[in-house]
Amino acid sequence: MTVPAPSSADDAVAMMLAGLGWLAKADLTSVPTAAQADTLRALERASSMHAAARAAALAAFTTQVGYEDDGHGSPRTWLTWQTRITRPAASAAIASMRRLRAHHAVANALASGDLSESWARQICEWTDRLPEDARLDADTILLTAAGSGANLADLAALAEQIRRRVAGPDRDRDNFDERSLRLATTFEGAGTLRGDLTPRCAGALQAVLDALGKRVGPEDTRSRDQRHHDALEEALRRLIASGCLPDRAGQSTQIQLHLTLDDLIRGAGGQPGSAGAPWPGPAAGPGDDCDAVIAPVVTGQVDHELLGKLASTVGAAPRPDHASDRGQAAARELILAHAVALLSGPGSLTSLLRTGRLGGPAASASLPLDVGAVTETIPPHLRRAVITRDQHCAAPGCDQAPAGCQVHHIIPRSEGGPTALGNLLLLCSFHHLILIHRWGWTIALNSDGTTTATSPDKSRTYRSHGPPAAAA
Image 1 (cartoon, helix red, strand yellow):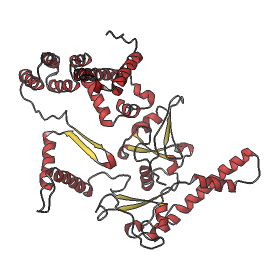
Image 2 (cartoon, one colour):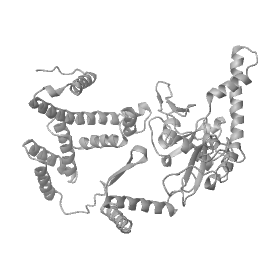
Image 3 (tube, helix red, strand yellow):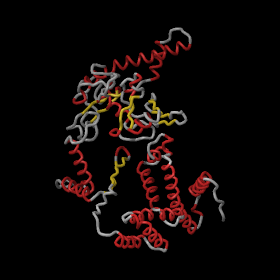
Image 4 (cartoon, helix red, strand yellow):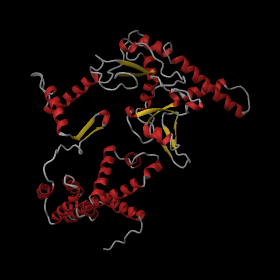
């Protein structure tokens, strides 16, 4: 059966999605196994062609810096936000694009469906170890062998023969250019660690594991992998405790004990009204509170329904509708201002509740979370509050960690913007210094904690999903 060729990129994408959609929903249990096998082979060819097509499209998109049109600073951040893939997957797509751009023969074999994506990656890894002027010929030889029926072991042996002939005298082969380490966080903060270590780094890590990963007695029933995990954690804990790492927000590494104003009013785990009630825990993990600096942080949220009722009562005097609206808006601002003054600060109601109801480290001296003062520098306690609220870069689609971010004044200081929690956002250097201060985008902090980014000509608007944790 002859299938008509697509006439455009949109037409080709529509045909591709239609075919794959049909196969995904089809009941293939009723067809012969030979047809099922043909389908699986064809899908693998389609996967190869998809890899080549994605690399070509991504290369063109990157060359023309198309990601900047949507307010992104790199193709990786664009992929994670616009196509909803993970950061490792985006990095892998970019690596594949760069790899195939340097190996045209391999890219052509993928585009024809004559080579699987995994074999293509392996061939590129082998020939990348050769001098640059020998890679194309090596790729061609290996692809010809693969097309003639050679298996992966045969190709590996052939690649080694080629390397011995063209690589010349042995050099310092420590895989320095291929070094990598990636920590990917998963459910509830757990993580997976993958990497390629240089001999020196691997030796240093092995020394740590050997020194700290030994069994400590007959009661130690941990497996070897578990002991190595615990050894790495212990080494990191000791490094942090040594004080050799840079401070964060002007303060040493610490545990922040978060509890809401409702927790305080209910007694925070103890009987309501009882002095010295136990503070809620664990702070981070069992035993972490034994020898750590603990900073209590009380958070709260505005009850907009109650605020509206209070404002309507305060501004209910008879007046024209538009004047009544202005009166209620002014009343809301007045009530909020007085509520913040009453609840926040060393001598505030919140501080009295916490020091009176909680015991131990949670009853330490209070620091104001938001004084609203215009200062030359952002106070450490206010910087910590911004980090607690935003958790990462607040620009929609960016998850840059706080260590790589700066605090941005939404209303600039030059225009009278205060150094107050409601006027501050945590932004990475790209979104802060380039997107906003060079390209002219604006990022607004919404009342529910989400953010909205708008291009200078108002043609593009992006919104973040889900409000971050409150810290006010």
